[in-house]
Length: 187
Image 1: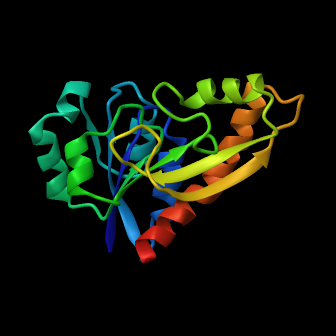
Image 2: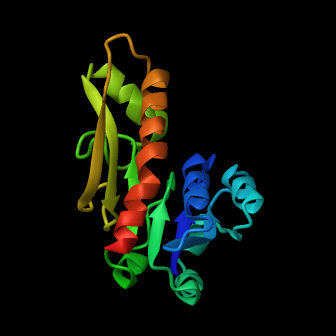
Image 3: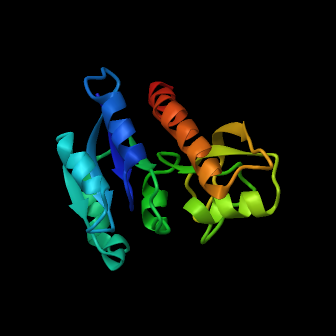
């Protein structure tokens, strides 16, 4: 049985979707959720699904002891699902091609530091894009620049508000993210 660790900073809908997808699976199990936000809704979502949660500070993330916490778990895949901090280079070195992220746009457009959530959707609408989508990619030392694993697009209408675009993107995330994770673990 393969082990997945999920990092999230916010509401945790993607994390919960991943947890539920793998509950009872013969492929993998979500063995822990890590968050840098003590008030994140992902905490309750994880606990309600019997997944252990670790809350940490930004400074702790970059300390050597943090790597040891991950090494004890020895995950087969680390999934960033709405995790807003830059992932530590040391963890990326120890887990090459075992850390993935989902981004709410079609990279390389609308990626990089500060481009997350509604900031992305606002930019898509302001620039009158005809499409947006999701990108699942490997994590490297730069924000949103790791090798692309999967992309799926959706049409953006001229009448769409950033909130409507956000809903369309969320539907794609919910539909495709768990399956892409499963495919990676089976490969």
